[in-house]
Length: 184
Image (cartoon, rainbow, N blue to C red; front, side, top):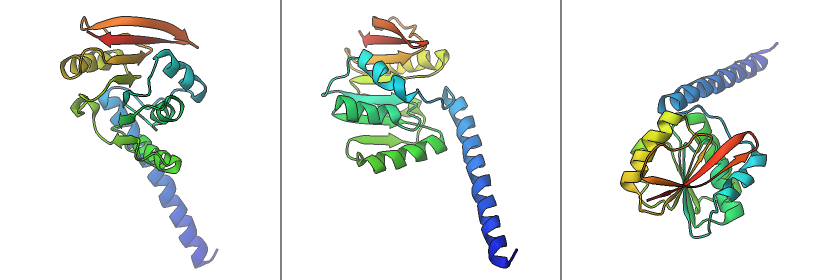
């Protein structure tokens, strides 16, 4: 193997190590803030979002937005006015930025690489989250404090245990339960 071959091999090794470091770091960041990066299956997204009765005038927030597949579907399928995501983990955030740009939706979708507990969510009319139960309850307190009455919250798999929210509907979708709440 010549010098060029060794350089190419070294370059590939650096890329592979870099990808593994990003994935590991991304995973640890996700766990620290409330849930690992576990994307919702693409064939369930439309069912889950349809259950939420999303409207075109909604300002849609995804707290823990991962690779932005939910945000992309909210804009593409439900034509929401605006979509905003918060993702602390590096790898899903970078992937989401790429997917949003590839779709040409940078003017409709904004994603921040931040912890959602520090997010400004006052503008939201609809909030989606797929997080662990303790994180769901902490976020419910934040939403109750910062959002207007009437904001709808769709929590996938885990219910909200907060009296400031009224359960509007719940439904089994595949093997998960979706809970739709309205802030009182």
